[in-house]
Length: 114
Image (cartoon, rainbow, N blue to C red; front, top):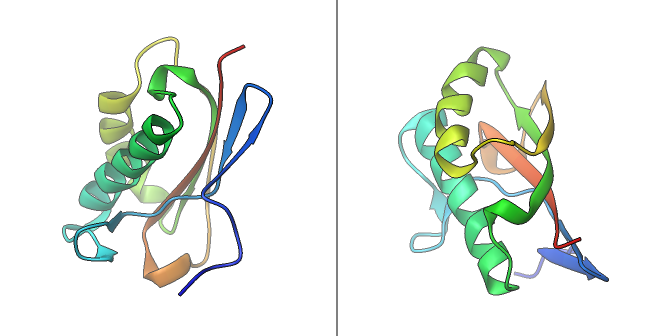
């Protein structure tokens, strides 16, 4: 089934990534193991989407993080710092009521080579 959005939209040297959740591409289901596993898979999915367009995590300039439980913020940050290093991208994080497929985390990013 095709959803009505693009995974990535490129404008000049900037990539705008749609929100990613922790779907394991091998199973097409959320990664098992709660927010830690979902966060790891979410960021792996972002890493792969960037790679598919010739970018990497070092090109990310902004992330927006949505968590269904703000108490998961510290756990998410432990995973986040495995994928990003200083200087970290600018970032917003907030709690939301629900996410698609009952995910615990969703992340959208903007990446640029400028």
